[in-house]
Image 1 (cartoon, rainbow, N blue to C red):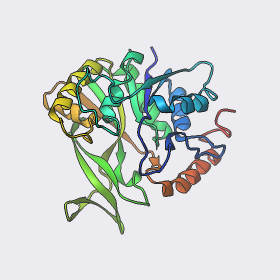
Image 2 (cartoon, one colour; image 1 turned 180 degrees about the horizontal axis):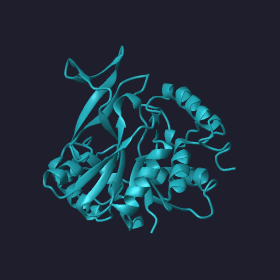
Image 3 (spheres, rainbow, N blue to C red; image 1 turned 135 degrees about the horizontal axis):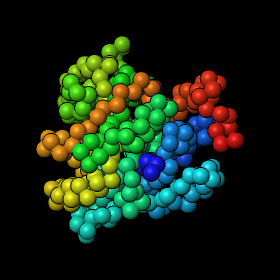
Image 4 (cartoon, rainbow, N blue to C red; image 1 turned 135 degrees about the vertical axis):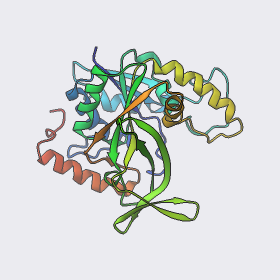
Length: 298
């Protein structure tokens, strides 16, 4: 059975200022998602699951059904405020519950090992090949994976970002993730902010870009932890249930090993609208180098 790819695309894109998930960046107006889909299908994934909001379904279907290859299955599922809440939680939320909740929204569509990515991040061709190999050969209820990128290859030139800086043990497994905010270049050094302190961080540190590999047995685990999270964050309408939260708890309880798959690819993303010209230039060069055909779906 071919692995599936779950694309998290329900986010609001507040810093970008628009529906960046379907904003074209390629030479023929291709979206970042389209390059991820192309890489995934080429690597051996079979089904593409879009996690979106109901209010953007029409725009997504119009955009992606037009390019869907005949042998690929596209499925659309919805992350809404009340998805999998069992009636729990606050009614005054203004944004979805976070990335782990978004994964949970894909439960009914996924019965096989699967990968999770962000809609607005470009991960590179090697990353999809390595992840597909892991999902076909190693994924189990006790073994998950995460693509590990070099921190210096994941920053924006137009503002600070948040990054999950990983500590990897001698066996190549994830030990823990340190969530760092306001990560940015300062001269030729990378720093992050902790209060008023500017703290340097190794440019070669392995970071999580939210590219994970899971066995489908993870879904009931996420659901149980999500319901606990709702109760723990009562009265906090901006609290978000992120993937590293339940992953870290599973690691600490020795319930799972998370293989960190090192990736040398350059990450590209459009955190800020000012990032777009740089990303467009990057895809132009990738096309010129023969990494992708032009147009992508010709």
